[in-house]
Length: 130
Length: 138
Length: 103
Image (cartoon, rainbow over all chains, first blue to last red; front, side):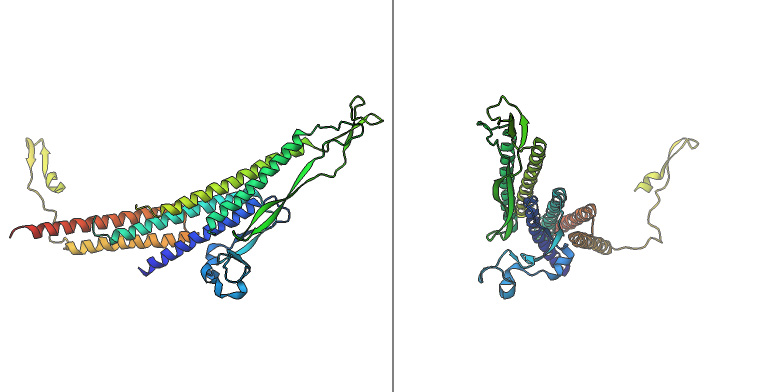
């Protein structure tokens, strides 16, 4: 069952990651025609996991704060809600962003469905009735 | 603000910006042949729209903002039409600096971008619904 | 039982249906597998199926598993869990019924 706990933690993190990534993609799409705007993305999940900082704990790292003290922000330095950002390069086309967005949505659906399934399997084993 | 709500707000700013762009391009197309009324007067001058990124503190993200709607400073070309009220002494009339082909292309792109932002909102809505569905019992 | 039915043969030469003596399936050499062992083996298999689905899900989170792989593995696991539960419930039911029997 130790594996099971790790599984839930990872799936939860993936769901969080994908939600934040969709925000990045939304920014890129909204600013697709903005002169001088550089698109960015999150680092790939496996890589980003190594350096992710839980968003709630950032208040203790003073030098990471961009906003007024006492407020944790969505975005700071090179991170969005704890996940690291990397630039996507200058010439990003709208089509590329929309393909990424479609993939991202699909991954999100998959992750939430898997979460649901594993939870229900666990719940079933806990129940005493059929 | 949570990521999914922020996503929708960001895309909404994109919708607004592209809407204004569509409106500006429509004005240009509608006035492609709007000449002046007095001799030697200027005709319709093409309008331009400029976007800029704007960091929104509440969202913690960069939304898009319409910086300004300006005019295209390009020269007017001349058309020979001595009978027109706006004809100058030589019989030439200044015509608007609007190129319909460019405007049509711009309109197409603006519509495409608008649709893309709309898609993002739809996707975000779907993601929110899936998250809520986790609460479902089976 | 199939083998016993097979013992009923048709032999035209002998004038119709013949009944051969039923052959027992179980001979001296059949390994004796206890019911408990069989159930244990099934349970192990089911646990493996669930673990496999957990591993595949982890891999899918990291982009290492294909959509079909993870969905297949999860469906198998769900089936295994449901089967195990159905069996457990039936066993408990049977036990309770036996306990209810007047001695």
